[in-house]
Image 1 (cartoon, rainbow, N blue to C red):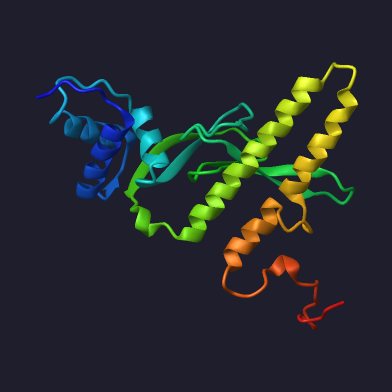
Image 2 (tube, rainbow, N blue to C red; image 1 turned 120 degrees about the vertical axis):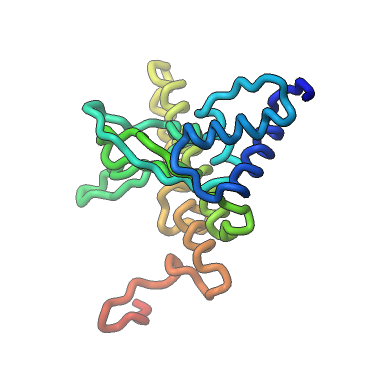
Length: 223
């Protein structure tokens, strides 16, 4: 057996072989055992953590992950997904007073989510084989748009932190307003919500966001 470096490409290939033989694996421990056993065919000694295997499997789109949660007494609304370490997307509603409030936070890549900042942490994982060809193209596009939204929210936070306490702190609102327009606007063609709507309705005529509001009695009403 050759002693080779466990780079990500090597691990991805091992995970792919394991999932081809085992389309459904009921625990992270079992996945790690199988992957390490697969790697032992080429590597003299394997030192590889189960968490790293999980993250690589998710980010390489080799598995769909099912998550069982456990409650926590602490509020838990992370900026980074605890499952795959990708950025979280904040889903927000507008209140009657015009304020924006977050009601859910979900991962931009995997299935992890948390509601209203309630304490909810992953307790158990199930891994289901996922071929890239099984992923609808629109699902992959929406995932990337959600990732872009998460990055924009992170940029907004960093801008605020960078200029707070300076003599020009009030100027941060210009940048943050522009970012919020891209993140939330119902009217801007290039906003994230409207791009997602475009992806969902691509090839089906004009997306819903371009159509005037109708009523149940007159669904096609134009005014």
